[in-house]
Image: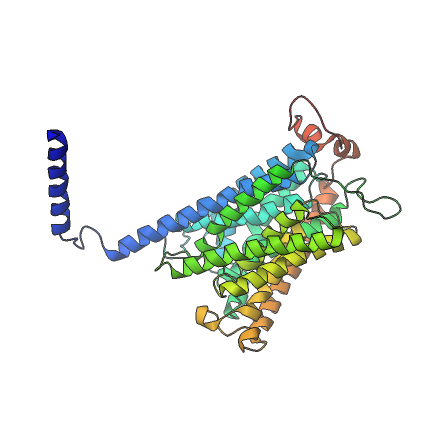
Length: 442
């Protein structure tokens, strides 16, 4: 008891000395305190976005066959490795370096580079590198189960080092779209449209998986091997998106903006999941979990651009439309015989475009836009700017990535052999099985 009494006396004395001691400018300044807090917030958000790589991996592995699981996870893993090096050497300079309206040209190898926010350079770089990795890994799902591994590594480096940073410079690096007041708060256009459109052109050039479409044109259902794994991946992505969107504030501020972005992110995801389930239920007669999962992701993608510029009710509408679009886009791709195993383009491409355009409809001037959206009396001005921006990005990525994939195809080849595709890329490319002890062919 005496020990406890003495401990309380010591603690009380120490607290009294603390509150009586003035915090001087020499000890800590409010500016330093703010920068420290903002730095921790940006780094925490970067860590969450990095963890999204695990979510992408689980979703992609779960939605494809067991015999290709190791291959897709290896691609997912190497995506972030390639993105980190490519963005360090070339990407950051192209995206945030001084240059012209189309490309940055200073700070290669991070030499002489400057931070694009009021946080230390390396914290800002890590956050942006995590975004770069997310854009690159989107493509893996669209081209799954038949793309050569070495071809994928070449693609992954090129999109991370050059293509994604050029788009990023246009919007976030002081390029021509930012000069037009084009708005994309957290990357519906920069990240998701880029990744989704790259997946679309890649899977068109690569052609469908063997047996996906029968000679009579009918569709053969190729089911994912592990829906629980895909479900876990979606939950991880949803969780990571709270770093992706709120982290794009790049500052804690008074917490108001972070809170708005967070609630909008959550509501859009929930609405997207519900609407996708209702849509597929009404079409097929069954509430398909896989489509509901993609609906939640569609809502998240769609709200990524407008999340800081809209009200929560608008987020629900935007997410709901995203859930409907992902179902319709998936059905359309099958009609066109474009084989996208995990729905990379319907989720990221279609809803990246929709989310970017939605700013021109639901955006509010009071929340930082240059003008009101169409539904709030602003006319077509903002919608016009958003349309120009997102379709310019889509066209550039379509052309640039199409050229890259064609060159890869004509040199080292894009597609695995028929034997490797039949046995599975796990065995053919990596010499191991995802599930030791047995092999699942179909």
